[in-house]
Length: 209
Image 1: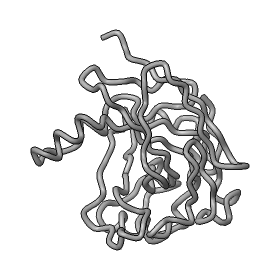
Image 2: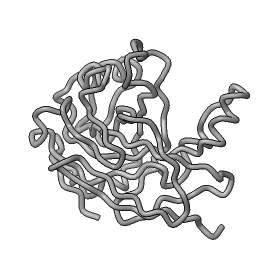
Image 3: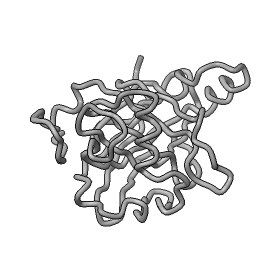
Image 4: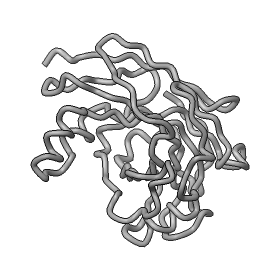
Protein backbone atom coordinates (compact mmCIF):
# COMPACT_ATOMS: atom_id res chain seq x y z
CA UNK A 1 0.00 0.00 0.00
CA UNK A 2 1.33 3.42 -0.95
CA UNK A 3 0.66 6.09 1.63
CA UNK A 4 0.62 9.74 0.71
CA UNK A 5 2.05 12.46 2.91
CA UNK A 6 4.89 14.88 3.56
CA UNK A 7 7.79 13.94 5.80
CA UNK A 8 10.49 16.29 7.00
CA UNK A 9 13.32 13.93 5.93
CA UNK A 10 14.13 12.20 2.62
CA UNK A 11 12.89 8.75 3.67
CA UNK A 12 9.82 7.80 1.55
CA UNK A 13 6.56 7.58 3.47
CA UNK A 14 5.65 4.46 1.51
CA UNK A 15 8.23 2.62 3.66
CA UNK A 16 6.38 3.53 6.86
CA UNK A 17 5.30 -0.07 7.45
CA UNK A 18 8.90 -1.23 7.76
CA UNK A 19 10.01 1.39 10.28
CA UNK A 20 8.50 -0.33 13.34
CA UNK A 21 7.84 2.87 15.25
CA UNK A 22 5.89 3.65 18.39
CA UNK A 23 2.13 4.01 18.75
CA UNK A 24 1.47 6.35 21.67
CA UNK A 25 -2.16 6.37 22.83
CA UNK A 26 -3.91 9.01 24.92
CA UNK A 27 -6.30 7.19 27.26
CA UNK A 28 -8.52 10.17 28.12
CA UNK A 29 -9.20 13.17 25.93
CA UNK A 30 -12.96 13.63 25.44
CA UNK A 31 -15.73 14.57 27.86
CA UNK A 32 -16.16 17.13 30.60
CA UNK A 33 -14.87 14.68 33.25
CA UNK A 34 -11.41 14.67 31.67
CA UNK A 35 -9.26 17.44 33.09
CA UNK A 36 -5.84 15.84 33.44
CA UNK A 37 -3.82 13.92 30.88
CA UNK A 38 -1.33 12.52 33.39
CA UNK A 39 -1.13 8.75 33.89
CA UNK A 40 -3.40 7.94 30.94
CA UNK A 41 -0.86 7.21 28.21
CA UNK A 42 -0.20 3.68 26.95
CA UNK A 43 1.67 2.10 24.03
CA UNK A 44 0.71 -0.32 21.29
CA UNK A 45 3.40 -2.45 19.66
CA UNK A 46 4.51 -1.65 16.11
CA UNK A 47 3.15 -5.03 14.96
CA UNK A 48 -0.33 -3.70 15.78
CA UNK A 49 -0.24 -1.54 12.64
CA UNK A 50 -2.30 -2.73 9.68
CA UNK A 51 -2.95 -0.79 6.44
CA UNK A 52 -6.25 -0.48 4.62
CA UNK A 53 -6.89 -3.64 2.62
CA UNK A 54 -5.40 -5.87 5.31
CA UNK A 55 -7.71 -7.49 7.88
CA UNK A 56 -8.19 -6.78 11.55
CA UNK A 57 -7.21 -10.04 13.26
CA UNK A 58 -9.18 -11.29 16.26
CA UNK A 59 -6.87 -12.89 18.86
CA UNK A 60 -7.72 -16.46 19.82
CA UNK A 61 -7.90 -15.55 23.51
CA UNK A 62 -10.68 -12.94 23.14
CA UNK A 63 -14.38 -13.17 22.32
CA UNK A 64 -15.22 -9.50 22.81
CA UNK A 65 -13.47 -6.93 20.60
CA UNK A 66 -14.37 -3.25 20.48
CA UNK A 67 -13.22 -0.53 18.10
CA UNK A 68 -12.42 3.08 18.95
CA UNK A 69 -12.16 5.57 16.07
CA UNK A 70 -9.38 8.12 16.58
CA UNK A 71 -7.44 10.90 14.91
CA UNK A 72 -3.75 10.04 14.62
CA UNK A 73 -0.78 12.43 14.41
CA UNK A 74 2.27 11.23 12.48
CA UNK A 75 5.67 12.59 13.44
CA UNK A 76 7.87 13.74 10.54
CA UNK A 77 11.23 13.81 12.24
CA UNK A 78 13.09 13.12 15.47
CA UNK A 79 12.55 15.78 18.10
CA UNK A 80 10.75 17.07 21.15
CA UNK A 81 7.89 19.48 21.95
CA UNK A 82 7.24 21.02 18.55
CA UNK A 83 4.23 20.98 16.20
CA UNK A 84 6.75 21.54 13.39
CA UNK A 85 7.92 17.96 13.92
CA UNK A 86 4.52 16.56 12.96
CA UNK A 87 4.06 15.87 9.26
CA UNK A 88 0.66 14.28 8.76
CA UNK A 89 -2.66 13.17 10.17
CA UNK A 90 -4.28 9.75 9.80
CA UNK A 91 -7.51 8.04 10.69
CA UNK A 92 -6.83 5.18 13.11
CA UNK A 93 -8.78 2.44 14.85
CA UNK A 94 -7.74 1.31 18.31
CA UNK A 95 -9.03 -2.28 18.51
CA UNK A 96 -9.36 -3.53 22.09
CA UNK A 97 -9.96 -7.01 23.50
CA UNK A 98 -12.51 -5.73 26.00
CA UNK A 99 -12.90 -8.95 27.96
CA UNK A 100 -9.13 -9.21 28.41
CA UNK A 101 -8.80 -5.55 29.36
CA UNK A 102 -11.52 -5.89 32.02
CA UNK A 103 -9.68 -8.85 33.57
CA UNK A 104 -6.35 -6.99 33.49
CA UNK A 105 -7.90 -3.98 35.21
CA UNK A 106 -9.40 -6.16 37.95
CA UNK A 107 -6.01 -7.74 38.62
CA UNK A 108 -3.99 -4.55 38.23
CA UNK A 109 -2.10 -5.98 35.25
CA UNK A 110 -0.79 -4.18 32.14
CA UNK A 111 -3.07 -3.95 29.10
CA UNK A 112 -0.61 -5.36 26.56
CA UNK A 113 -2.67 -8.46 25.69
CA UNK A 114 -5.80 -6.34 25.33
CA UNK A 115 -4.34 -3.50 23.30
CA UNK A 116 -1.21 -4.63 21.44
CA UNK A 117 -2.13 -7.81 19.61
CA UNK A 118 -1.30 -8.18 15.92
CA UNK A 119 -3.29 -5.96 13.50
CA UNK A 120 -5.07 -4.10 16.30
CA UNK A 121 -4.30 -0.61 14.93
CA UNK A 122 -5.61 -0.01 11.39
CA UNK A 123 -4.22 3.21 9.88
CA UNK A 124 -5.53 5.08 6.84
CA UNK A 125 -3.53 6.82 4.15
CA UNK A 126 -1.64 9.78 5.60
CA UNK A 127 -2.93 13.31 5.02
CA UNK A 128 -0.35 16.15 5.04
CA UNK A 129 -1.05 18.51 7.93
CA UNK A 130 -1.22 21.43 5.47
CA UNK A 131 -4.44 19.89 4.09
CA UNK A 132 -6.09 20.00 7.53
CA UNK A 133 -5.76 23.60 8.73
CA UNK A 134 -8.44 23.20 11.42
CA UNK A 135 -7.94 19.79 13.11
CA UNK A 136 -10.06 20.67 16.18
CA UNK A 137 -13.14 20.77 13.91
CA UNK A 138 -13.03 17.49 11.98
CA UNK A 139 -15.98 15.12 11.68
CA UNK A 140 -14.99 11.48 12.08
CA UNK A 141 -17.50 8.91 10.90
CA UNK A 142 -18.23 5.31 11.71
CA UNK A 143 -19.98 6.32 14.84
CA UNK A 144 -20.26 10.05 14.34
CA UNK A 145 -17.95 12.17 16.45
CA UNK A 146 -16.29 15.56 16.31
CA UNK A 147 -12.75 16.53 17.30
CA UNK A 148 -14.15 19.76 18.75
CA UNK A 149 -14.99 17.64 21.82
CA UNK A 150 -11.30 17.15 22.62
CA UNK A 151 -10.27 18.26 26.08
CA UNK A 152 -6.57 18.57 25.17
CA UNK A 153 -5.37 20.35 22.03
CA UNK A 154 -3.07 18.67 19.52
CA UNK A 155 -0.08 20.95 20.38
CA UNK A 156 -0.64 20.23 24.11
CA UNK A 157 -0.68 16.46 23.53
CA UNK A 158 2.51 16.53 21.44
CA UNK A 159 4.23 18.73 24.02
CA UNK A 160 3.16 16.48 26.91
CA UNK A 161 4.18 13.22 25.24
CA UNK A 162 7.54 14.62 24.16
CA UNK A 163 8.37 15.50 27.77
CA UNK A 164 8.14 11.78 28.57
CA UNK A 165 9.76 10.32 25.45
CA UNK A 166 11.62 11.65 22.44
CA UNK A 167 9.32 11.35 19.46
CA UNK A 168 10.85 9.84 16.34
CA UNK A 169 10.11 9.96 12.64
CA UNK A 170 7.17 7.69 11.96
CA UNK A 171 5.78 7.66 15.52
CA UNK A 172 1.99 7.95 15.66
CA UNK A 173 0.03 9.52 18.53
CA UNK A 174 -3.62 8.49 18.88
CA UNK A 175 -5.86 11.16 20.39
CA UNK A 176 -8.55 8.89 21.93
CA UNK A 177 -12.01 8.07 20.59
CA UNK A 178 -14.55 10.85 20.14
CA UNK A 179 -17.68 8.91 21.15
CA UNK A 180 -17.67 5.64 22.98
CA UNK A 181 -16.86 2.19 21.61
CA UNK A 182 -18.66 -0.41 19.51
CA UNK A 183 -18.35 -4.23 19.35
CA UNK A 184 -16.44 -5.90 16.52
CA UNK A 185 -17.40 -9.38 15.25
CA UNK A 186 -15.81 -11.89 12.92
CA UNK A 187 -16.59 -11.15 9.24
CA UNK A 188 -17.64 -7.57 10.00
CA UNK A 189 -16.65 -5.02 7.38
CA UNK A 190 -15.73 -1.70 8.94
CA UNK A 191 -15.88 1.55 6.99
CA UNK A 192 -14.69 4.76 8.56
CA UNK A 193 -13.45 8.19 7.56
CA UNK A 194 -12.84 11.87 8.15
CA UNK A 195 -15.52 13.79 6.26
CA UNK A 196 -14.14 15.20 3.02
CA UNK A 197 -10.57 14.08 3.80
CA UNK A 198 -9.91 10.32 3.89
CA UNK A 199 -11.69 7.00 4.38
CA UNK A 200 -10.81 3.33 4.85
CA UNK A 201 -12.45 -0.10 4.73
CA UNK A 202 -11.32 -3.23 6.60
CA UNK A 203 -12.65 -6.73 7.25
CA UNK A 204 -12.48 -8.54 10.59
CA UNK A 205 -11.06 -12.07 10.50
CA UNK A 206 -10.03 -14.74 12.97
CA UNK A 207 -6.70 -16.27 11.90
CA UNK A 208 -6.30 -20.05 11.59
CA UNK A 209 -3.60 -20.51 14.23
